[in-house]
Image (tube, rainbow, N blue to C red):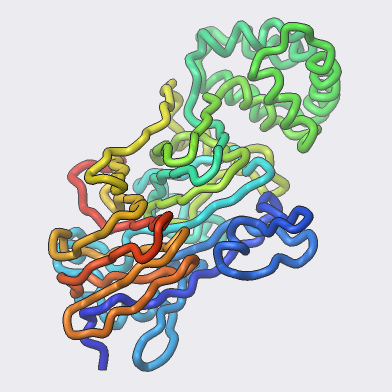
Amino acid sequence: MDGFGRFYRLHGHVRHYPWGCRARDDRQPFIADLLGESAAPGQPWAELWLGAHPSLSAEIVTAAGEAKLSAFIDAHREEVLGETTLAAGFQTLPFLLKVLSCERPLSIQSHPDKQNAVRLHAMRPEKYPDDNHKPEIMIALTEFRALAGFRELEAVLPQLSRLESLAPWSAVWQEASELTLQVLCETLLMFPGSLMRPMLRALRRELSLLSDATSEDRLCLDLLDGSPADRGVLFAYILNRVKLRPGEAMYIPSDEPHAYLRGTGVECMANSDNVIRVGLTPKPIDVPALVSTVKFVARSVQPDGGEEKTLGHRVYRTPAREFQVEMLRDAALDLSQRPAVPGVLLVLSGAVELSAPGVAACVAERGSSWLRPAALTAGSLRPLTAGTCVAWAEGVVNASAD
């Protein structure tokens, strides 16, 4: 029988969403290459899930064979989650770790806070599959581009007003008795589709002829190339453009609109699959849900380089109470110095030795993922090769949360 004082091998699952990366010439998509697999021609590799969410639970390798991680935790909550996690009210792994890799934009989306998640799940469980919120962090592995958080209205309006093709829309929001970010977004999201399509065609012509195009103009034109009839392209003016270099991160609180545009990164979030979409997607959108849940407040989004704990060991702190992510580059980890909470590690490059008292050490190769149960209170992770990189996500119960 398992004594729980060891690391457990995990097998995650891949999502093949259309925006994922495809093979190009002899180059495999990042996730396929990480897992040592070959992508079928034209097949997109979008997300690798490493968690216990019922939508796509990872598998865990135990002495009795493979089982769903979600079911394994249900049967062994105290050993896997630990006293701290259980006392905080969590009955399963509080976070979901992913690798996300996109060559096309994701939808303009947000995630409900806890109160709204409970409400939306009760109303439409088929669309909102759980009652949890979803704050998240993205840590770039390649150059990563995104839209996130509202820009100041004073920066948005001059750029929109100068575009003659947008006159049908601007005439609507200019009539508002008090123009706010919420009013601007509501007029965009509720603008008649019969008028939106010709307006976007005219916008595309106008942007292609501009001699003084701004970064927002160029991004909008790029988005129009892929989504010529989608009003979501206009969020290029409303949301902040964010560019992350490898190793930089950004935190997205619940109820903040965003869209990942291009790049690959490690993503960690509260254990939820709730998504409210309003643009840049062929999937159903839910304008009333977004309008009723989003915080229409401008926020500057700055890249976060993390905090260097020791050489090669970088910690990314967030207000979220469910998780903390760390990146280990040629750096070791001593579990005796860690809290007794569950963790998941993913070897992104190189190889590491995983050791635990009374158990033979094992080698974790590139692409492998492992569960640290809370019951494993001693042991270590040690790099075996130069250039080793490990993503480590840990359940943390912080005092603050959105």
